[in-house]
Structure formats: C-alpha cells, structure tokens
Image (cartoon, rainbow, N blue to C red; front, side):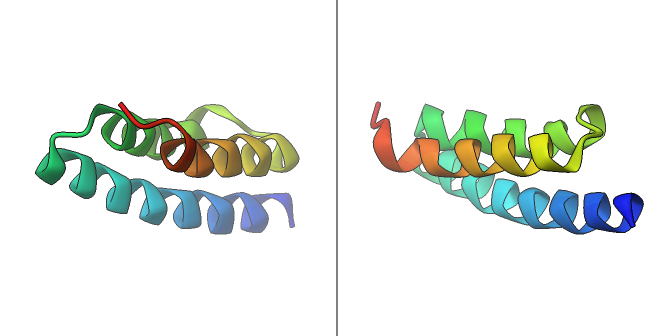
Length: 68
C-alpha cells in the first residue's frame, strides 16, 4: 500500500507542479516556476508518504503567499 500511495501523491504533485511550471514560464514569475520544478522532483527523492504529502502541500501553497 505504501507504493500505491506514493504513486498517487507523486502523480498529484507532479500535475500541480506542471501547472505551476507552465504558469511561471508564461508569466515570467520565478516563485511558481521554481515551485513547479520542485514539485516535479520531490517524489523521486522522498520515500516516506507522510513527508511527501507534507512537503508537497507546503510547496503547493508557497506561490500563493510569496509574490516576487
């Protein structure tokens, strides 16, 4: 079950990351762009599902609070 949860969370954060990446690239906004890239990468390096969910949610919320 750990593998299935990890795949689902990784797919979810990868999809959100793709949205942030495309938005950041079109708008030339650095925070959504970097957050999107980070959301692409984190599922490959974090194996704990709870940590993956926490970091993914944190990176998904960051562009709404930091405007550069």
